[in-house]
View 1 (cartoon, rainbow, N blue to C red):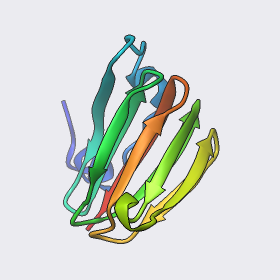
View 2: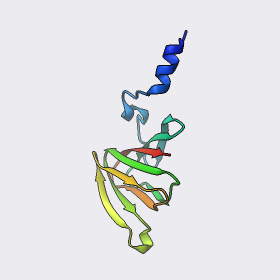
View 3: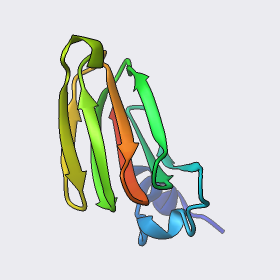
View 4: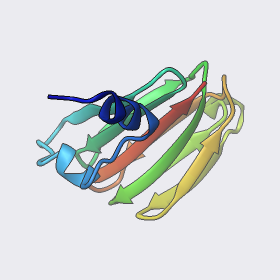
Length: 119
């Protein structure tokens, strides 16, 4: 039985004890994604990329943060055709992007990435 206090506490925070376990295995030639939290102003998604896989250039209407947990990837920020900036990402790299910024992610190795979208 859930009490009113437990319901209030659950709305105040979310705990994800092992984010990497949300994508147990990365199948060759695939991209796996799992929404791990969805709230009114925040969405958190974990992505598992097999080496060689890419999220092609796209935009988001929300401010976003990429946090690389494992592997190595190449991230292009801004339109590639207009000289967008390319950066190498590895475990520990964090990238914040404004809404509407074109970007793409290419996995150089098997990669685990956390995406947080605010707004």
